[in-house]
Length: 474
Image (cartoon, rainbow, N blue to C red; front, side):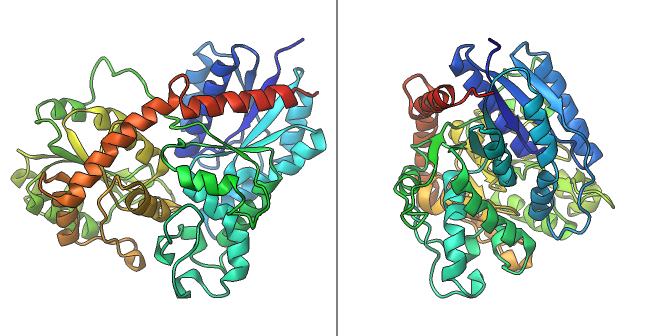
C-alpha cells in the first residue's frame, strides 16, 4: 500500500510557510518512513510572495525528502477587505472546494490535514472527507490561549478592551493589560476582530493543535489550556508543543558582510536591532533610534528598512541619506553598522559578539533569540507582537521592557531606547542581569526540549501516534 500522507496547508507569509514546513519535516523524520508529506500551495496574492514561495519550493524539491507540492487553482482574491487578517481568512476560505478536490484526488491514504491557524474554515472539508484535522499555530501558546478565550471574552467585555476597567484574564498568564492585546483585537467593530473570534471558536472543532513552543517556555499557559480554563471548562483539543521549530542552516562558506563585521567586535558587546519581514521606519522614527543608539555608547548592528514603495506592502531597502541624521554614520563608524536591506538574522544572533536584541517581537524571532541565549528589548509593531512583548517581559522574564507609544504608531523616543539599551547591555543593571540570566536558562531549556527524550520530542511522538493510529483513511 502507498505510504499514508499528511497534507499541509500553509499560508504564504514568511513566518508561516517555512515554520509549518519545518514542523512537517520533523514529523516526517519522526515517522521513520511511515508517513509522507503533501503540501497544498495557494498562489500568493503578490508577486514578491510568489517569488519567495517558488524559491522555497525549489529548495525543498531538491532535498530528496518525501515531500510533494500540489499547486491549487488560482482564485480571485477579495478586494473589499479592511485588514490583512480578514483578507487572509477570506482568501483561504475561497480555496475550500479546491482543497477538497485536491485531497480527494490523492492516490495514497490521507492520514491528516494540518492547516495554518488562519485556515480554520477548512475544518469542514476534513469532516466531509473523514480526515483528521490539526491546526498549526506559528505563534506561542499565550496567543493560542487568548484566541481560545476570545469568544467568551467577547461576551464578558461589552466595551472596547482599551475602555475596560482592570486587566484581561488569560489563564496561565499574569493579568494582561488591554494595551498588550494583539492589534486585530483592539477594535471590535473591525472585521479582523470578528475573524479572530471566529478562529477562536473553530479551534474547538479540530482533533489537535500543534504549537511552535516548548513546554518549558509556557508551562502554566499550556496547563491552563489542557485543563479547559481557557474554554469555560469544556475540554479543548489536544495540544502538541513541538518547538522551537527553527530552520537552522550550517554557516555559509562566505559569511555575510554583517557577520564579518561582527567578527571584529568583542564578545557580547553588540546590540542587534532588526524588525522582521514587515518592519520599517520613517525618517522621524529612524532619527530617534539613531540618537538613542549614539547616546547609549554601545556597539550596534541596525538592520534598517524604509517604508514600502507605492502600491506595495513590503519594506524597501533603506535610503540611509534620507532616513538618518546628518553625520550619524561618520560619528558611529567605529561602533556601529547600519545595514539597509535584509540580513541573516539567525547567523547574527548566533554570533558571540551579539549580547542583546531589540526586536519587533515576532514569535519566530523570539524563538531564535532564545535558542541562542540572547536577551531582548521588545518593540512590537503589528499582529500579535504586543502580546508577545508582554509575555516575554512579564511572564518569561527574558527581556527588558521599553515604553512603546501604541497610539502614536508604536513610536519610541530616543531617550527611552537609550535607557532600554543601556539596561540590556550594562553589567550593573538589575533588569538586564535578570534578562540575561533568564535567556541563558531558556537557551538550555529550548535545546533540551527538542533532544531525544525532551518535552517537544515527546510531544512530536504523541502527535505521530495520534495521526498514525487514527488517520490514514482513504
